[in-house]
Amino acid sequence: MISYERQNQESSSDVATLDSDIHIAPAPRVSVQAFCETVEVAAVIQSAGEDRRLGKAHIKIQMGGITAAIEAYRTAPTPNVIILQTEGRSDILSGLDQLASVCDAGTRVIVVGRVNDVTLYRELVRRGVSDYLIAPIQPIEIVRAVCGLFSTPDAKAVGRIIAITGAKGGVGASTIAHNVAWAIARDLALDSVVADLDLAFGTAGLDYNQDPPQGIADAVFSPDRIDTAFIDRLLSKCTDHLSLLAAPATLDRVYDFGTEAFDAIFDTLRSTMPCIVLDVPHQWSGWAKRALISADDILIVAAPDLANLRNTKNLFDLLKAARPNDRAPLYCLNQVGVPKRPEIAVNEFAKAIEAQPIVSIPFEPQLFGSAANNGQMIAEIAANHRTTEMFLQIAQRLTGRGEAKKPRTSFLAPLIGKLRAK
Image (cartoon, rainbow, N blue to C red; front, side):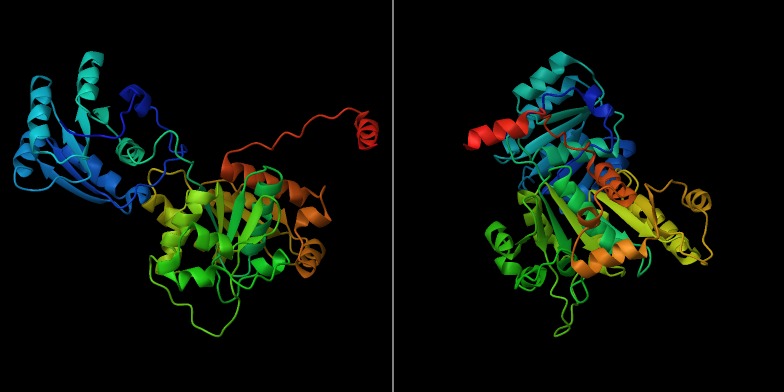
């Protein structure tokens, strides 16, 4: 009998109502082989294999259904996951029994069929099938089914990665990233970490008034040492809920990295932090593109001019095409209302992008300049300023969380506190 670790107790009708905003943890490096009977299902699985959450999985698709699978595994080892498509009902149970005789222990099976019958479903579960999807299916259903095999209900939630980048240099993307992370940690009470990916010129250490001796460079240049304990030692604590993985901001070496240079760092952060905010510099390299595409949510910061409009449109089109099963990137306008500067109106900007900005942050040089020079956040020097509220609004949209409710206190609380102290 085939051995499986997880049995999905959801009906396929629930799967059909999947919303792309639901968080799905990425799958590890596993092998997946699909045996399809129709080209339509094969195309869906092929599309699912291009999803960012299956980026580490190796997917191979063959035609022939369960019969081809039985024949293939008579002489070959089985992969981590097998996806089987069947168009009928009579042959599926007997076919699974034959497959069990040639399958390696630990292999997991996902069945795609057309019969919507609870009795059949129970028989499949009894035989150890991990999931049963009813055709026609969407790519996101395959993504969730495969990724779900490797996350148990009692496992610690995988952190969400939020990538923030500028459509053009100098638009204040880093400042917004740091203030949004502050709002996530302070106002939403969500443990967070800011990873400054601009290793040569990063400003996170200055903005948070931190000067840690170690940071993200120690991790990226020592990939063999990366684990939870090592990353924890590199983090600099800013507040009770906010930590910083600082950039060295030195020019004593050249920071050229491969496409997957930061993967191990991000995976380790996911396992320990509920929220990871990536401060992605304005550059177009393999690792920067990968960081954006693999993030759970993306915020693009733009100024209201033509170059920013073009770049924002290009980023939107690329990211939407590369992430068809995720919600579209979000964007905000910054430095709006610079005196005597011609600007593209917000409604014209939104019309070209075909999406409204989350917020339009006004040009406030005195406010932002004072915060930057003092190593403080906007909320620290102007708690009731409208810009502070905008950062909280961005934080809520990116995390999908409302503002943390503060406990109600009685007007007698100060007196009671003094009495208790005595």
